[in-house]
Length: 113
Length: 115
Image (tube, rainbow over all chains, first blue to last red; front, side, top):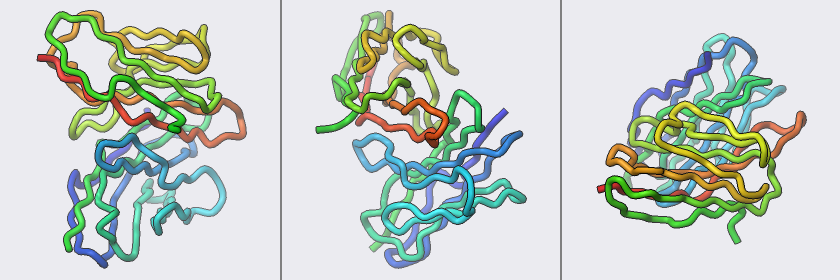
């Protein structure tokens, strides 16, 4: 069965600092992996996705994530945090050929001035 | 205009009342989903629909029912609301097809409070 674990329900960084949000998954077959972002009072929107090919994927707003099969990880990074990055971030996994996307519990990112 | 809309955006209701949450989409997607979001639990799938005649239960369907009135409309009902159904509810859509990457498109959510 698929599962997603996001390490840390809350992460706090200073403006300009590196953002690292961790995601580990379990899947018996090659997965599709996603990061979604949820701003206050809004629905989720796709930040980036990995399907096949290059393992380093770039998304919107300067975020990127690297698929590491050996570590079953898909951590999200951004070199320099901005106040507008404060939001909740969800990692998600879907098996190729599966019917459902499984979401992690979410990590709330706080950015300090 | 938003591609996926939900009504109402906020609702307070009493225990035992019947309530319907509505979702409409203009993306032309076949697949639609209802999720529930609780703090610390992420999103849990309530029901999903592949088309008007194909509706399936998700992980937490007990106490909920759905109706797919048209390709563009997917409603979620709570027949007799209870306080532990207080949550944020999201509708989502997805395009069907072998070449797509399974990205889902979410509505803005409905915040439901059952007192």
